[in-house]
Length: 392
Image 1 (tube, rainbow, N blue to C red):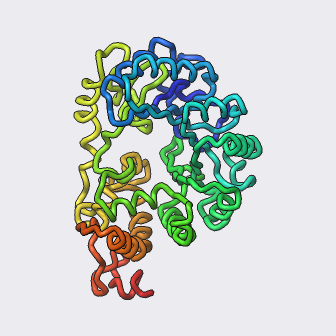
Image 2: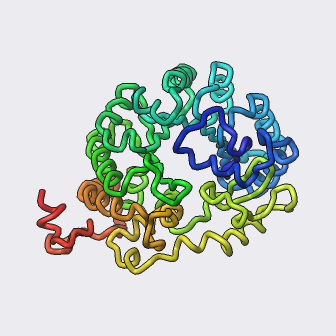
Image 3: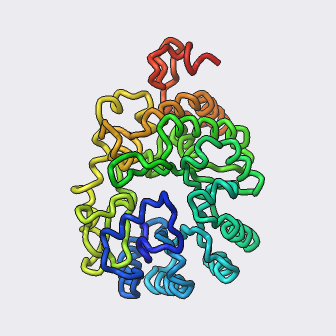
């Protein structure tokens, strides 16, 4: 469950932030902040489902604007409404500006997992994030000192998409081993591609470059979420992350006033599922989400259905299908980027899968079949594999 206690409100104004548009949904509200009534209602109703692990993801905007006492209240209410033996996990996504030792001590005590937004070295980071690099690095240092578990969320934009090696080296030099890369694909008001958004060709090249660096460190405690999700998919065909999942039914978004939406990219009046205060439980939201939203992920066009990578990709993120400059709404704008990356990385994933299965004595049907030398290269070039990505 993604919770937006401050909605779009933030102490920065990053040029590429997609969530700023939510101000249009709540235009008359000054400094939206979640009330205790809404907070207790969502915690009580969510915890009664007793999932194996009940995960609360606190995002924004900037959730730390609620103050530390708000999150102390979160813990109190989770303890009040949780059952004996119930596992509860909290995740905090932050720009890091307000994180100090008091915050770090609290986060450590209650085992919050923290996502810190950091786009790379100082000049790269500051290009779109308001010269906050030094403050974010101070946050990183404090979290490391207090042994708070965290990862880095790095937005890929025109500032860093062509600087993969520099980016990777920076994170390695600063002992930042848990990484997640997210492309900033947005439209301008006149429905053109935002100047900071990576093209499909640029993003595909970036993924290949980062992968080639990562695979040398893959078993040396460097973790890139997308790559590890793909390796898991090669091994076990398990449910993948939101990006490559078969449907969009993994979570809800709870806005500051209790409004419920199916996804933070779709916080729009026509996608509103209801309000957590006015409903007895989440079952109504689940039913409405399937009827209004979730089914769309599985509506793949013929290109996707026939694609060699369908079982890994599942059409990618829906918001990338709905991108203003995307001509084919049944497949991702980044389709060619993913084809290039999957084809580039296939040999390594396939061989690593075989090695792990042999070591562990597993016998599983592969998610993706081996590419024959005389098959057409699945990158989409139209050339035989042996003369394209299978040359080396």
